[in-house]
Image 1 (cartoon, helix red, strand yellow):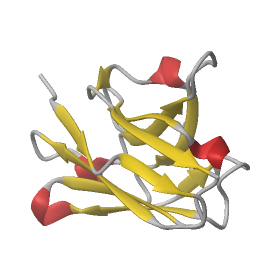
Image 2 (cartoon, helix red, strand yellow):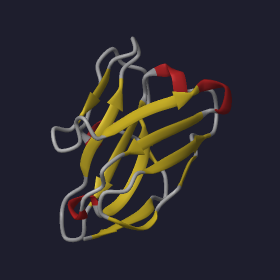
Image 3 (cartoon, rainbow, N blue to C red):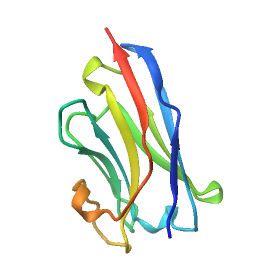
Image 4 (tube, helix red, strand yellow):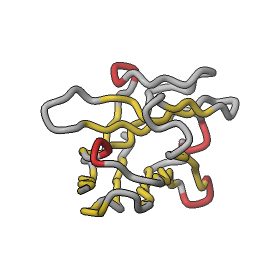
Length: 125
């Protein structure tokens, strides 16, 4: 069973930077099975960033150029560096893992089987 624990959320002013972390049980961080998602109040969950097994990272258009997803294999930890935060970035942020490793990144939450409990981010203007 894969366990995921997010941290790093909080309430911030627009324009600042914030990094989220996701600790993952087991040695799967480098396998291209991981992704970051968020869910704003009253909206559906959307994919933010996703990894593939050969190193490609895919980003949602709404965060390209502002968010950077990375991983530390030695620590089994994912990161999501978010710069120039906007009020629209408010929401619950989740990391997730797919059941198997794939050669393509997916921003679709239906492709993910394991989810963390989420960490809340609130950005005020």
